[in-house]
Image (cartoon, rainbow, N blue to C red; front, side, top):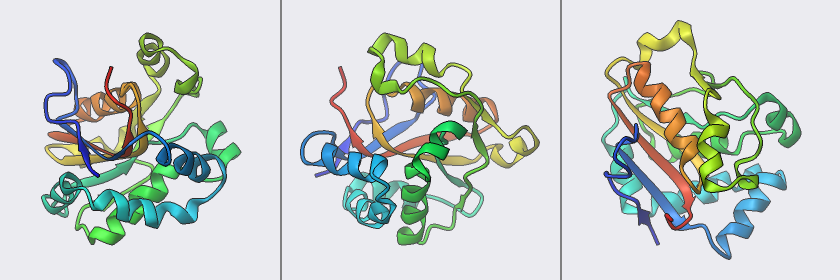
Length: 189
């Protein structure tokens, strides 16, 4: 069931590793769309449980300390207002609860500072440009990331542009290790 994308994601990635629970294909794509766009945030517990059945995910959470972080991918304010919730935050909170991780969680350490077009509307090459400058670590809190491990949680990873960009911002703020944990991953192109 689990899909591990591995430690060598690309030559210049800020991500050390990425772990996904399932392939983003039917029936998962339909269920995730219902969760994300249908206001079904109650499904977060089910999806977290599914993701934790992947051996790679369990290993990621087992290695965390109280100084480390589990962070959701942030949504732009407009998108958050439209949806009414951040699906990545709900998944992140459930993963932390179910694993009883000692790591800290926070929806306001990594910020989305610029609204962008939905990545799904763009071709692969346009996605990195679309999210450039979209993320920032709260400037008053960068010291909290110095030398720490970060698990960055999202529901779906397609091209990886959003994850890579957010991971780069976390690295620049001092994070020592960044792992992406996603519910579903499309097949890398």
